[in-house]
Amino acid sequence: MESRDRYLLLALVFSIVSHCIAFLQFMLQFPTLGLPDRWFAQFSILLCLSLTTAICQFLFQHHEVARVSLVITRIILLLVITYPLGASINVRTTLLASLLFENMIYLSFPAGLVISLLLVAASLTTPLVTYAWQQKQELATADNLLFLAYYSGTIMILGALLKNAQRLANERKKLVEQLRLAGTQLVETNIRLQEHVVKSEDQAKLLERERISRELHDTIGYTLMNIIATMKASMELAKSDTTKMRDFMTQGIEQAQKGLAETRAALRAMRSATTTPRSLVTSVNRLVTAFKDTHIAVKAQYSNIPWKFGGLIDATIYRIVQEGIANAIQHGNATDITIHIALDAGRISLTISDNGIGAGEIRDGIGLAGIRERLEHLHGRLAVGNVAGGFQLYAQIPVVEEA
Image (cartoon, rainbow, N blue to C red; front, side, top):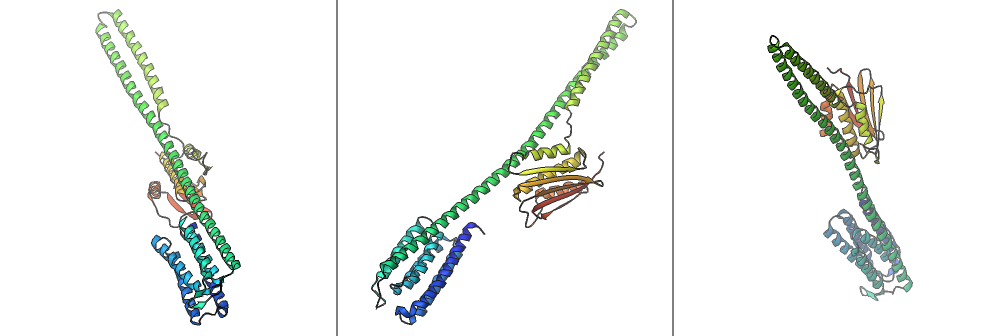
């Protein structure tokens, strides 16, 4: 139940209790009031109508027109019920306190305050009427009127304080939700940024490989073309000019040596630029590090696993960890996430546990459906569900040697 509903329910309970007390007060005072006997039944009916109106106020609290109309009806009923009571202010005070409290809770400021002050003024002047329903009434004493004013003011202040507390609670709740969403978005952005950096690095290495490949192609092609031309010229000079032939042969050897050196340099550069697959442990640790300076604690634990299993298995586990962290934060509001990867009897077990709110009903969205599809290719299985203190995702993958 939201904080606003709790305050409105409190106002309803207070109103029900006040109507019951007012009936008991009237029943005890009726013999001394000098009112006709029929007024007892009329009072009871009007009091029931007033209580019914209070219940309707709670039920139709979100309808502005209905709520204001019901408040006006309550005010009219209060004046009609208490008008013939004269100087007896006990019933009037009890019902007035209930209505003032509801006005301060239901109505917005300053409308609730203005209506409440007018109602208090009307309630203070009504006991000064000499005749009510052709019967002479005793005037209320100053002491009674002072008590009525003080009690009414106290209830109004209490209602105003509760109304303000309700407003602050709602604002705090909205602020907390905004901060949570901002933190979640920041974490997601951080993860996506890391992926972008990795992809950019891989793309840069791939472009470098392509550039070196082109240079290698051009270098070897040019060198071999020169060697072929030199060899042909040497063959033609073999019988006519052996000295010049030797010069051409020397030139060819030099070209070959130079081409070999350039080829080796290009191959070394290509080897250093080759994209080295990042290990599973390194990849998962990068995800964990992304939460280092946030309010979310993420830790990874490894048991008996190698530095990496292989491209497809590593990629699958990485995506499962990534999706598990995102779901724990987005849907579970988790602040403590533990990742455990273990290898036992030829099977990899991955467990992601959190301290979140769990899930009332688990449905496979795009993320979980994607995880299941990846695991199916590896003959693995997935289990998700609520556990004591949070939520848990468990995946198992058989180890298969990649070709």
